[in-house]
Length: 523
Image 1 (tube, rainbow, N blue to C red):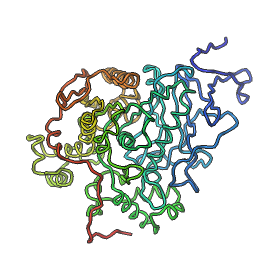
Image 2 (image 1 turned 90 degrees about the vertical axis):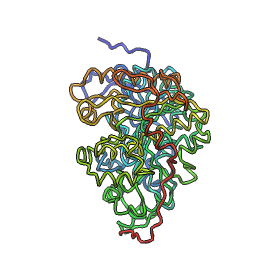
Image 3 (image 1 turned 180 degrees about the horizontal axis):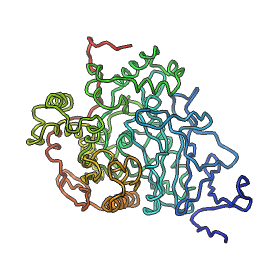
Image 4 (image 1 turned 90 degrees about the horizontal axis):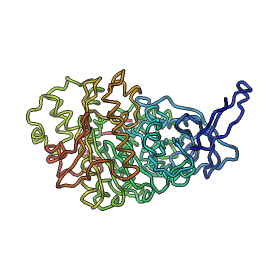
């Protein structure tokens, strides 16, 4: 019996001669500015994977701005994801040595290539050192089908390829890749049924940090009108600090931190050198960043990224962008567990951590006066890294006259003693509740309350993309209205009042290189 194809996509049959001669494969083809692409029909959605939006950044293009890909004549098969960019082997997938394919590719999920629906573009996280759009956790099927939106994910450079501050190369190449991907969306998404005038970006952790950076970058103006930022990291580097980190790692390989010299180092070897970096011995120069999981962050270089996001938003850079921003209640507990410190934090370690991360170590106890040992260790890092940077962006946007909605996720992971920890929101927003990471937190089988909460978040995020209204009031300093996300979500005054009051006078500035003449840089 012939298969009936709904008119939501332009489907054309072709014979697959490698299979039974009576078998026909059904594929979806659309035109982009660079050439035609052939995706796959997957029931409710048409999916296009691995569409190049820029040339492979190797050879003479390594460490440089992304360059648009060359047009092609034949129909390009886009049924498999592009290779991941080089990244930390402590966190990411194995490297892909396919020299014929670019790392810089985009993926599209759409239910109707003939419509004009809102577009949701995702920027992945991974501590700025890992991440790839082919991760099964980022399957856009549910968001596209339930939310009546077109979903886009894309690869961008991370780690040294994307963020190392080296002479002879532009800063923040990972952010420049984000700009190139968004420009590709603007120029091509109408062919996939998307509306280029109604683009929203969303991202978590380092992905939210990249989006916060875009809010501060003049080049990004007009590429999106709405932004969802989940758990913004507070770490942004000064150019001097980032250059010193790169110089230290280059020196460990007998190299200089220049594009010319490091271009002779294979990407996998450069990744390995940064993975081998032990940061705490450099604390005299690098400060508290030496005790975090990553030697990378966006660099406030004065050109690509002129100022920090908080300063830019305070000055009105995002006044015409509608923002949804928030964090999880127990952000840092995931890292406490990964470090083997859950229940094992000593009073001495807690005191050292408070001295590193809080402006007033003695005064921080007032945030939670009855805290047991280990609680302030977790809380100060949750605040410094994610909670207060996210709150502060909402405050600055509101004070500048912009529109912003604030949330806090308080639903506790049912399968692990981690509460509402960092990254718990990712499987909830995507509906990828059976992915490996989600299973660790949520369990198998997936409890009904997780299914319902995931459906709620998908509905709120896609409603925001369509209308700018996620279903709760905007934030302002007087009412401080915040959606508290739990089994029964509610609108309340922002819950973390003690932390908000403690950090009110703290400036999330670019982290400096400390002047310590007694510190030597190991070779």
